[in-house]
Every structure is written in structure tokens, then in C-alpha cells.
Image (tube, rainbow, N blue to C red; front, side):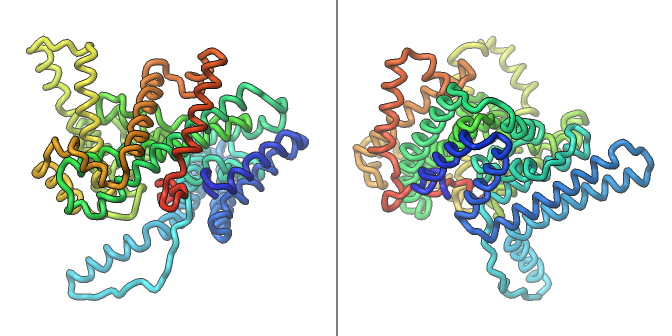
Length: 500
């Protein structure tokens, strides 16, 4: 079920109510059952995949723990064999369901070079929701046990809940065992009710619903109108659509993470922050320290650093960066335009690092005041533009479409068409465009607060006097009810990252 569905509006209060009234020793089992019920709302059969991943990594973790302290070569080989078994089975399942058609098309293209023909696949494979997220979470646990950074979890119920915890199951954040498993153990011992955590959790959920239903789904109307037939629009409409898609994907994904953090907070569990005002970054490298943090840190710890990280010659460091972002692009989807998008992110970071000495000399030569607001604004603006244009390749169906989109944007740009009323023929009338602009302004203010105070929306609200707290929450709730749920047929659209 989706967070924005009526089913969740019934499901979540029931889960919370029973969680707090039942004996503490049953809480983990109750949340595990609720998590599987939550996931089976999409396709009950695919719950077997989560169970398989859970059993494999649980058993491998116990095996790694059992032979951890033995230093004989044979035992080290056994530990490596257990790790490889976990990786092969879990990543093999992920590759089959997510990349089968991608690899099939590559094989067909390669065979065509030699005059051979591979027909269409007879298989009809449906991508299970959230498989990339829970697979990476389970695999990360196995690697952590292998490295000795965490102890193997012996309680199967608790470990199964770690893999399938419903708030973050289908779209993250990707939790680490060292952060979440201990908290799941604590819920069976700590006091029943923490009003402060519940209030903060509900505020975060409210802000997440606002981002999704008022901003993201409304921006999607313009995006879905323009991108499929981009060749029929001029540069101004293409620029607006590219900007709104960047806003849409941020609000769509960050809203899921925010609702997940809030729902977990109501249950007394703290999840990892996944977004930290990324559009206030001053470089692409900084964006990726603030955007989808759980995935970025996963690739850093389990791919980039094992490749050598930055403790190696510069060329090798750049190679490691490119490999990491190519894999990140492929993680997002089984298509070349995702791979190209990942390569762009890596190239931006590599070029930025390579030009750093030249940049420092230019700043010194022209006595540039780099600590001023104007310089920060210039850096932030350039960073956002690069990030926005790169996401054109994320949204288009092919790399070629992305190139043509940007070419048309630049070659046929007429700034006055932004002000002659033609933007109101892109799916939103004046009222709804005004609501969207207002929503983006509110979003900017909340993210600016985070950039300054390093605190989320719940802290911003709770810092105010009681009257202001009630006014803010009431206004947001009214906006969600009146202007939200704005998908086709007034149904909330599916979260974008469900497809990954």
C-alpha cells in the first residue's frame, strides 16, 4: 500500500495503537507482521523474495560470526565463501528481476553484430516494489558482519524486521544494521509512550504529505505534459518542465523519506535522514552529500572505498569515482539513459576536483571574495543548473532524447514566453500554478532553515509559540486537503522511486 492511500490511513493508526497497548515483548513480532502485510498490499507473492533475502543473509551472518575469531587460512576461506554466497544470491535475485531485459537487449545487440538473432524473451517479469532498497540493506548487513563492524543478529524475528520494517521498506532510507537493529531491540524494553517523539513524527509526516501531494504531484502535471512530446515545445516550456521535474523528483523522494522518518518516529524509532536541503549546495559533490544520503553513503562504504577511495593516485581516484557513479546510475534503472546520468554526475565531480587548483589561482589572481553571500549564490545557482540539466537524461527515455531536449531548450529559447500566458496551457491553470509557486516558496524557506540550523521542519514548528504551531499545522493540513491528491483522476500518483 502507498503512504498516500486510504488503506494506509487505516493501517497506520491501527498498527500504532496496538503497538502501544500490547505487551512489550510482542512488539517486534507485531511490527514484523504489519510490515509483511504492508508489502503484500502490492503483490503477496513477492513477500517470498524478502523472506528469501532475509533467510540467506541471516544464515550467512551467523556463519560469519561463528568463524570470525579463527585465523586459519581455511577458516578465512570459509568466511569469504559465506560472504560471496550472500552476495551472489541476493544480487543475483536483484539482477534477474531488475536487469534481465537490459542484459537480454545487450546480448541481442552483440549477437546482431555477428549476424545472429536472439528473439524476444518469453518471460514476463514484473519488478518487485522496493527490491533494490531491501536487497542493499540486507547485503550491507552481511558485509558489516564480515568486516566485524557489527555482531551477527541471532534473533531471527528482530533481523527479519530490520530487513522489512514497513516505513522504509520500499523506498528507503537504506538503513545500516548498526543504526537500526539496536533500536529494534530497545522497543521491547523502553517505556510505552513518548509524546515528544510522537508529536515530532506526526509533524514530519505532515510535511512529507505536503511535499508529495501539494508540490510533487502538481509539478508532475506539467512534467508529464511536456517530456513525452518535448519536440513540440519551445525552450521556455522545456526549461520550466526541466525545473519542475527537478523539484518533483526531490519533493517526491524526500517526501517518502520524511513520511518514513515520521512514521518510524511515532513508533519511537529514528531513521537516517536521507535529504539535507540539497539545493543549497555549492558543488555537485556537495549535492551528493545531501541527496539520497543513505544510497550515496552505501556506495561510498561498499564500492568506492573498497576500490581504493581517494587514498590512491589521482587518476585511480577519478576512476573509482566514475565506477561508483556508473553503478549508481545503473541502480536507478536498467536503461542506458540512467547509466549516462550516473556518468554525468561522476564527470561533474571529477572535473570539479581536477579544476580546483586552477579555480584557486583565479580566485587569488582576481582577489575574489569567496566567503560572500553573492559568491555563494553564484556557486549555488551554477550547481543547480548543472544538476537540473543532468536530470533531463534521468527523465527522458533515451540518451538521444536527452541531448535533443537540451539542444531544443537552448536553440529555441524565448524568455518572454514565460510571461505571455502560454505556461498556463501546460496542464495547470493560473490558480494551480499559483499554488505550485507558493508551495515551492514554502519549501525553499523550510530548506533554508535547515541549511542554517541543520534542523528539520518539526524543529522549526516546535520552536514557535503554541499559537503559531497550531496555525502552521492547520494551514498545511488545509492545503493538503484542498490542494493535494492531485494525480490523474485526483488520485495520488505513485512515488517515483517505487520503480527503482
